[in-house]
Amino acid sequence: MTETLVCLTARHVDTVKLTDGFNVLEPNTLDRLLSVDALWLGPRTWLETDENFRQLVSYVVFRHAHSVLVYRRTPKGGETRLHGRLSLGVGGHVNATDLVSQEGTVDLTASLHRACAREIAEEVATGRVERLITIGIIKESGNAVSRVHLGVVTECWLEAPEVTLIDPGLVDADFVPVSTLPSLSERMETWSSCLLSHLKSGQ
Image 1 (cartoon, rainbow, N blue to C red):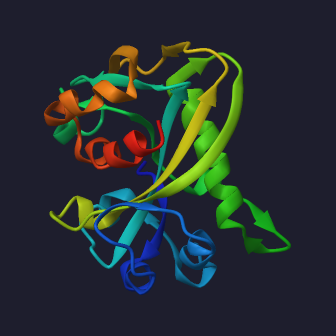
Image 2 (image 1 turned 90 degrees about the horizontal axis):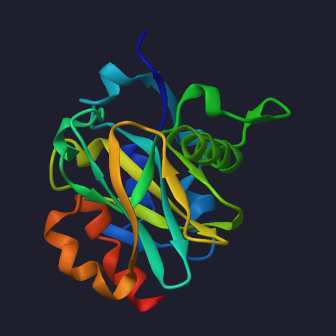
């Protein structure tokens, strides 16, 4: 059975005027973006090729002090285009089971928080989490795959640099100083490489 995914209409996303790449959240940006009026649910097999919609993807970056978790994706992972690439984020699609309803209306912000917590629990085990902060949106339009996805980036700050990978498609996890990340950029997946300027400015 195919997944039922949560997405926004591409036309609505375009009205928010996001640039290609990583967009730092400005006041009210998330509220304007997460409009229930633009919400759609559909089967993953259909949405992967329909550019009228952008699937919401939770993308969690683990941080401690001045370091960031880096790992490598293996062929056991679901996305073949990412195999062998280094990544700074874990997560995945927001699906129908993540939806939170308040008095009969979908609360997209709460749904994203639930999806974020689920993805963390499914893919890694960590020590104490100090705070979770949604920091921005990744929007790309350079190819057919990127045009049907929209990343919601959350930083997960940990009390100690301790993360154990659960997903067998993720290996070689290590906390790397932010200052050394540019030297790894050519081996990174696109979504991770577009975060480098933001991470460097905030280290």
